[in-house]
Length: 601
Image (tube, rainbow, N blue to C red; front, side, top):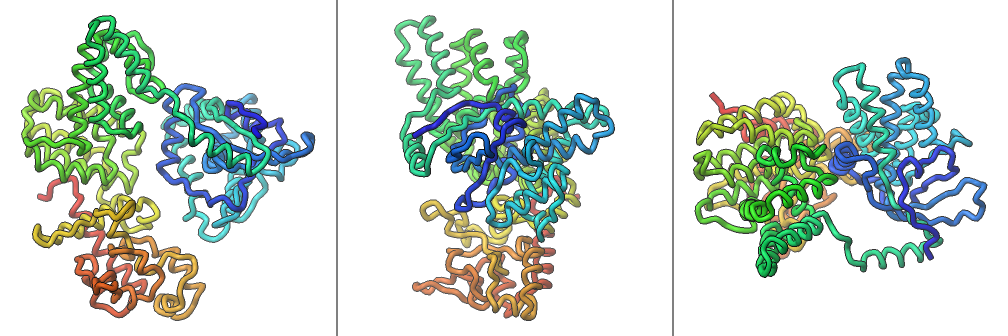
């Protein structure tokens, strides 16, 4: 069934001497990875030591002739291997831009990098062959042409709005930012390229689709391996058993209490352990002064850090981290604190706007609140300030995600010696200094916001709606039915590939080609977005049907649903580009006011 299983460095999977291509079959979904995945891949490689493990891929190998080109059909891991090839293409393009300054050895490295993406024996044969849905393969070939890896291939219309191109551009920008000094740029990119090449993937080869299916089933029914948290627990309990014989059951129960504070999600547990160390880093510096590369906790150094802390003072460490776990549980909304009931809502907002990087700072101030004389009103201001900061950050990417941990570690240092209102002012000053300007924020809000970050857009729309409501008329826009929201984002002018004729007539006076072009330019703008109940009931219906739609109980599902966001829509019979532009301008102005970091004078 399984032909081979090997853990390969990426350099070997893209071996310049190998006559192997990775083909994504037509039945696979299109390329779907977005900014979060690109960022995580880049940061994981950049932040961790060489040889970082990136997961696995499963390929069907039905090539009978080992001398001919081996075509491996990627049935699991296509997003990962496509993204890695785009990363290599971006590295090549950045190095090629400095070709004149490359040494002879670096010129050879550049040529070898090219051969990772196209076969050495056949320069027309690309190494990774994306599937054809949504023009993935055309977009990919045009990127290789632009990067001068393969022969030129004209980019299809609107390629820049699709994810293949966005991933490539994202990696180019990240590589440019590795060094601000021109003379160091090539060296920094080369160093990163080496880390990519050293990262590893497990490649599993099977003979048939049925074998692949059986393998999926088998893998999904196996137990999970020991995690970093398991290893930390084992080290801690072993140390405590030697120090405090006869009480291991109590220590084990205390450990389970800590995990109960954090919940069952391993990513949350691991994040807590990283953020706990980073929050109290100054306190731990003397203990880890002789340990290399532990200024910031990462996935690769987590075990090393906690082993040292446990060896130094296991009982004291355990007592402190239990206290921190209780505070973190409050931040997560898993436990309540009668002292701070008013903080539940802003904390929930911070979670919804993906503000988890700031939990590092919040953990610190909650544990140390008495030392900083922080009352409920101060904590409330701090959390709401963080919410406004993350709304802006998550649309503009300023500051970039990779800088957030160091930012909040820096803020922890900046508030040392301050109390009460001065803490709030210092945090506001630091966040304002690194956040996007109002002009940068406005520019993003006026663009294709939905395709940039649909989660942040949903938060903005809900916040605008909630601001317009009284306590008595408040609607729970975050209510769930099963795994989906009752209230969802609705594209007024539909986003589907096939634009219905009534919309072609209304938007483009019957010109289907013009309607498609206008859709590309305007459909994801803020003015074309609203909130409706049970979005699936609206879909591609005409504007009038969307506006007047009701369910069997007579409830308004469309724009007559009484929401502030839909007031203008309920009063009109038409929707066109002027309508989108006008409503965009209005909502952008309201959003800028609602999420201002600086207090209005």
